[in-house]
Length: 115
Length: 109
Image (cartoon, rainbow over the protein chains, first blue to last red):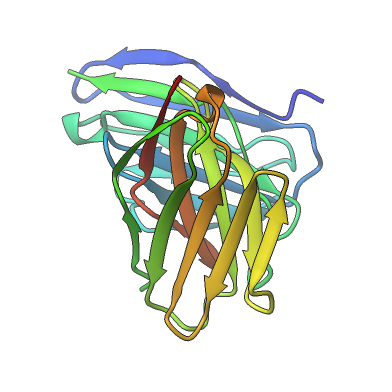
């Protein structure tokens, strides 16, 4: 099992550009998550999904969009990049969730710099 | 919403010493309390977790204790080794996970 994989590892964007961060898991997990991690801070939840076709906002969703057409993939879309979106982005997945939280498995992260 | 505070932000110990990291939370409905270890350039990895119906859990050199009444839980690492050096995050869960701000642990040989 590769677990959770993310691409790209690192990207520099200009203000106003768009990009998609890719996330794939091969553990057949129902739940998938996108977090951002700013320096010296914990992880903030951007969006999450409880299964294919179902997504919901987390704590900091503004400026991002997601879709979940398959169990395996959960891409994160930045439409108009802003310097405030400079961060490290982590994708995670878990078998269970909701009111019975289970272990979340994290990918290696994507470092994004917006200039 | 849930508010999680984590202390200390940095912790330096000598190899073989014990290390303790503490987190407090605000929502009494929270029922899941994991601890994650993040090494440089990597994603967080679960090291131990505890649920609200348990007061303490151990796994070799690491243990977690939970005080539901006081709404705090702690990570204890005994006989620390240089490879324990990393950033440790607590998290609190009910519906979603809310993370603490992290503790950078440095274990000196």
